Image (tube, rainbow, N blue to C red; front, side):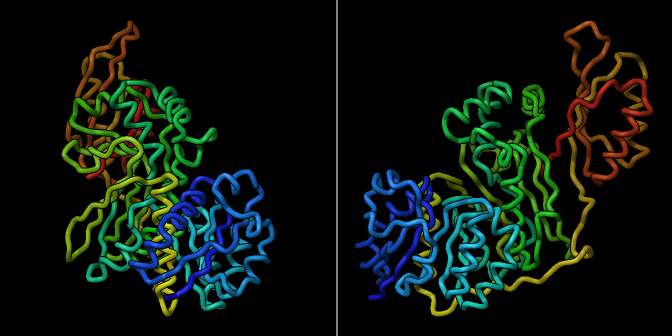
Amino acid sequence: MKKVGVALLGVGTVGGGTYNILKQKREYFKKTQNLDVEVMHVLERNLDRTRELGISDDIVSCDIDNVINNKDISIVCEFFGGIEPARTFLIKALEAGKSIVTANKELFSKHWPELQEAAKKGNAGLYFEASCVGGVPIIRTITEGLQANEIKSMQGIINGTTNYILSNMSDSGVSYEDALKEAQRLGYAEANPTADVDGFDAMYKISILSTLAYHKRVPISRVYREGMTNIKSEDINYGKELGYTLKLLAISKNIDGKIEARVHPAFVKNNNPLATVKGSFNAVLLNGDSVGDIMLYGRGAGDFPTGSAIVSDIIYAAQRTEPYNYIIEETTDEDFNNDFFCRYYLRLSVVDAAGNFATIADVLGKNNVSIRQVVQKHSDDDTNTVPIIIVTHETKESDIQKAIAELVEKNNCVMNVDALIRVAQ
């Protein structure tokens, strides 16, 4: 039986979940995997936390050298989050020949090449299943389940906080502000929710997933990002009337060798499987040229779901005779499409007068924007303006932006563009 020594850098929520899984299932792994996995060291300042988990003080310290210099430790799991000291510690571990396992999507999306270089130097492995979509095995599916495919596209709900907020707004009719407060009360959202609601978390993840799917480096600088802090309940309700559900989506495509990657709020048709994903759950739709469409669904965060992915990587790393090699090409401007095609939902405040809609349609048409659907609502006030909702046919992002600029700046009939939301295919 193979003995596997593991170090845990931090035992917060996910680190604690990982420790509990390793402790509770040690005998199970001996029987089913022929591995004896032992936690040999823990880096943690909070002794109350380690004692709460039942970790002996003898294996707890704040000195990374206690991990690096322990020859019996072959796998280092990082739970600090952020860039430092995680980056420095993991590079040190890799160069010492220790494989790393991490859920740190920010670190990985920003410093992957640097980590890869350290891994090559130390002949060690990089494992990061838990960095994307929590307990859902999306990375292993892409790298080891779909080798027969050229992956053409993926779209998904890959942030549980935002999905909970939008689900609550849709189901209960509450405002964004109230839904966010409820998510914070339940522990789904941080006190500072910027990383989630402004799309940074999903941006990191789709950068990683796109790089793996297309075997080309997709840095975060190439991911279009738009948050959801300006979403209004009325747009969610108007979307419902039109047969749509609003989600914060991560989307990437590889069309004729041109990659696009984006994160933004998007309406999906109610018959789209993603429309049924509620609460803090995540889901990803993948399309491969051989397999067609497949969908992965599950919990995207939490101590045990994410700990499950961490432990899976520990076992996977322990069973390999050589580190896994990711074949990734570096990219240039020529590899990306920066002007994507999409459908759009527009809500305009328009002066209630004859001929104004014809003027709007003319402006859109001159900018290559074709109208697919239009609804005019009655005004509830005495401002002499009415809301008009337009859903376009597929058009270029640059064309819709030009049209909006012209409607606002050069047209007296449109008082305001109240909402612009993309509509996923």
